[in-house]
Image (cartoon, rainbow, N blue to C red; front, side):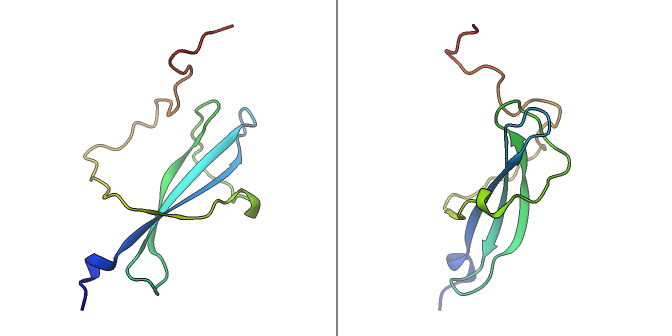
Length: 103
């Protein structure tokens, strides 16, 4: 018999919805745990949301339309415990990409 830790897998879920500030796409994600090949995912937890255009981080998320939900993928890497939560006041996306010039 295999140990439960050997069969446990994690799945990344991504979806998108409209940003209320700039109309860009807000990408939201969650992680779920599947304890074996035949069980449903459990321990589904949100990992945040951010507009990839303006960096806005909504406090409340709308339910994305089915066509804006992407197929879950297996996350094969072990996630390290974070000792400090991410800072909610700082933009998640840089305002300017490296090497990008202003017009």
